[in-house]
Length: 345
Ligand code: PEP
Ligand code: MN
Figure 1 (cartoon, protein in one colour):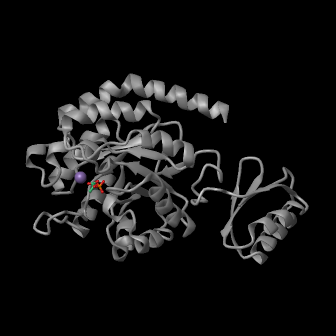
Figure 2: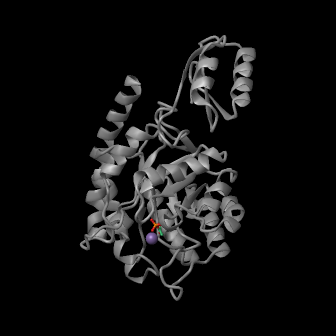
Figure 3: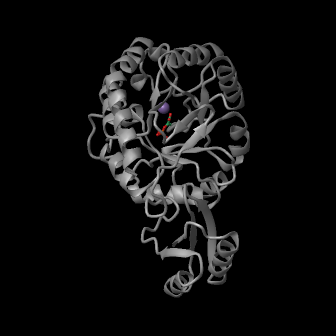
């Protein structure tokens, strides 16, 4: 449920409401809105009795039930989009944020070269896997700690933020030491013990949609992270598995619009994994901008033919530069639309 306090509600009134909510068996989670305090509470108590009782308390404007099963992440809970600050960039704000880099961190030369290249053409974050979820146990599994250190070096040289995947709750602390954003891969979207650990990791999370997961399941997984203490979650559409074989996955572009209705969390599109084919990445990137994603995450490699993973979907340096140049007019329209929305809210 959500309890909106009156504009000039006192600290004491707010504290009384908190106590009453807890007496009804609910867990309190408070957010201070721009103008008034809004209290969110979740739990298994008698909702009708609780709402009636709270609504009659001094300082309370309104108490309503959240009908969605995902509470904290729903639009009902919070109208304004969540803004996530990562170094000097805000995701969910008035800038479309591009994250780019290789699928895997392979070597110092490869990651530094890519970092310079992506920074030069407008990326704000460098992606690169140090822990790789591979279908075959015989494929390259990632440089692990050495990869994290290389990403750190790239950050120091270029100033880019770092986004990298964490696959196990055992590694969360170590990856969080190096990364600005922790990526949770499609295969781990419903690894609930990992999701719970992320609640306390102190870093923003990019949660990728599972291979065959519904939008509701994606939101429930995000709810795990937020309910365990971390509000800085962004969602990523990266294509889902369908009967279609022309592309690696089927990009559910509609998911971006659906998510923008259902949740206040920022939404990121991954045109690389969604298609599996580099020629399809630029048109899908345009779609990501047009439909109102908050950003995108793209695979770029200095020499895709030599990439140890996902070479077929990685842009080469020329394609990357051309795509970012071609996106400029679309990004200008995106910004206009975003500013108009901000005025309307
Ligand atoms: C990746 O980003 O390289 C990756 C493995 O993504 P996904 O989890 O979407 O397959
Ligand atoms: Mn990849």
